[in-house]
Image (tube, rainbow, N blue to C red; front, side):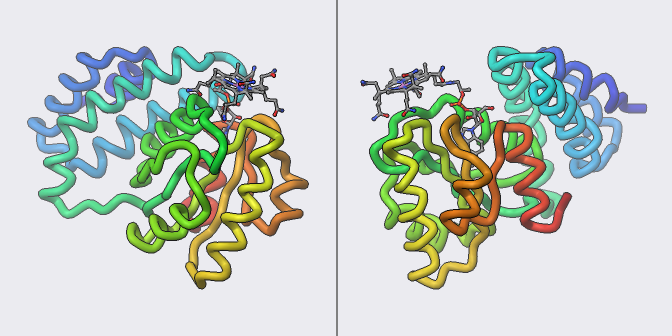
Length: 210
Ligand code: B1M
């Protein structure tokens, strides 16, 4: 019988090769790809997320766990596609115009992927029009914005406004060191998250998948 607990544990430890091997073994043993994803990879990543939130692990551990997650996903992806398993939703993610910081954004992206979402990362220094265009093109359920500079926070206002003006039906979530819940409310964003793990929980709440 496949050991999905061991798979989750290998992911938490950041053992990329172990994760790939245990994912393959689980599939070979006849476990469905959705179950391998939920009870193995996502289960492991959500433990990492909780520990990160509680300051029990830090950025390097999350990056290593995310790398291990990718090792498992490489093996799992063809099986998921074959079984017609869809991601929960698509999230368009970017750092707003004028801002080149991407370490936090990338962490958010990794945790969102680890939570079963399809993440379309549109990079840094992204103007409002590009957010709008990408959300439309990708059929995104959520538009996620990161800003690390007080001077670029107003760009988030621009994106929220541009999405509304274009009539794009998408939920918005914002975050980054200078961003606050109050600011999110002020600009009419749907949600704020303080860190990458919370961003995943809040995004799932926004799409009713929590
Ligand atoms: Co810059 N920088 N930087 N910088 N930089 C800061 C942000 C700063 C606080 C440093 C300081 O002065 N103490 C300061 C901003 C001051 C302010 O506006 N309040 C600053 C400045 C001023 C600048 C420049 C203007 C410096 C200059 O050139 N004079 C310049 C601006 C360039 C630009 O963007 N146009 C600049 C440049 C750079 C580098 C290029 C050198 C580099 C970025 C490299 C890169 O990202 N590829 C850099 C770095 C590394 C930093 C610090 C040191 C670290 C940022 C970081 O990666 N943290 C930073 C000081 C600091 O924070 N100690 C600083 C780690 C990361 C994991 O955390 O990004 O906060 P963070 O992400 C967290 C949360 O915020 C949250 O989750 C993440 C993980 O939990 N989160 C979200 C982030 N996005 C989210 C989105 C969400 C939800 C949560 O929902 C969608």
